[in-house]
Image 1 (tube, protein in one colour):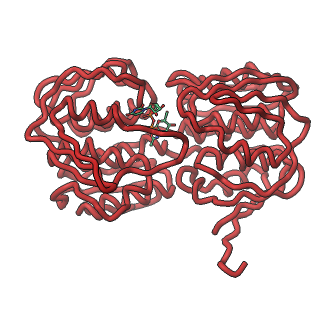
Image 2 (image 1 turned 90 degrees about the vertical axis):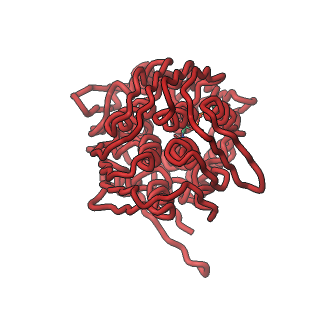
Image 3 (image 1 turned 180 degrees about the horizontal axis):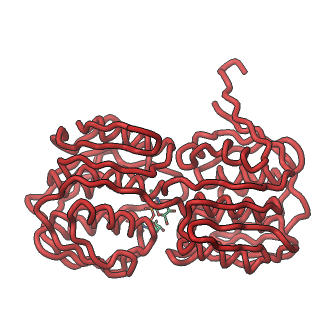
Length: 422
Ligand code: UD1
């Protein structure tokens, strides 16, 4: 029962440090179980999903501990199998990576069916198709998903849709498959590349990550490694959009500007000033913003994870904008919450038609999923008056110290823990 109370209307100014990328971190933490040697992972975000994944590894038998902030050591020598039936895997989507990693190392996995944000059907048929092609046999019943194989043999796998999760899952298992695996129509997202770089640092032989054809040459064993996770593209994009929304001037440190190009391009098109300095960006307001149209697409297109914050920004920009969500069919649900703040948005299927309003009204709103939660925080930062965001646990899954980071930029935002009696 945690809420964020936000007094909006302040221009954000100052510097913010971006944390490690959640979506890369979760794939990498899962990947550590491929080895029975020690791995040290740095630059992990301090977020709920990482803590849950650490717990998952511990339950599997790994020795796992944070030696300092964002630095996790994993010793997987104590893991004897990859069966986890206590429901922990239901707490997050990325637990599906245990299927690939566990199949790779133990040739057998049983877990509770993965959970995650409710933003659409989110099938895992491509994960199944890929792991089956390598030799896995699946059973799904009573809320459990199992896969096992006598041996894994490399092959050519064509993905019917561009999927980050299936691309990484196939890479995880194929590391130990005999011979060569080729993934065609692979996802090119930065976290696919980061997961491949991590696996290569452990001794895997993966080539082509970042293009749509990835080749994995099977190896017999992996060794220990130290690895640092890339900065979070989505967190960085959220602060860039927040700077635009509050007519602010924010330096965003610890970023890879290349990963942010789809966001930088759109914000510039709207009229925001953006300057690039090595691993940081200055995002500043200097003239009235113009409406733009957005369509979410696989990388290097505009990321679906930033569709919601961007829609909030466009809802405050005079004129008409159109946002098309092409990745997840149910990612406009939060607009019902946003309507409480007097936005003018009409949703028809996967399209939102936005007529910019002059100002947002303060309101009490509820996070409906992780990125929607962040978008609502942004809306409250822009609204005049005091707003409340409830169901903050969604946001805590993926944003490190969100209220502190915004407070350091001058925002008036407070976390309040409510007891049953409040
Ligand atoms: C991951 C990210 C999520 C991001 C998304 C798209 C994690 C933990 N989550 O989610 O933050 O929004 O990528 O960048 O990294 N699909 C299928 N069959 C499958 C798999 C996917 O049809 O087997 C479809 C999905 O429904 C969706 C599209 O493919 O329409 C992309 O999904 P995918 O990239 O796999 O997303 P997730 O791994 O769920």
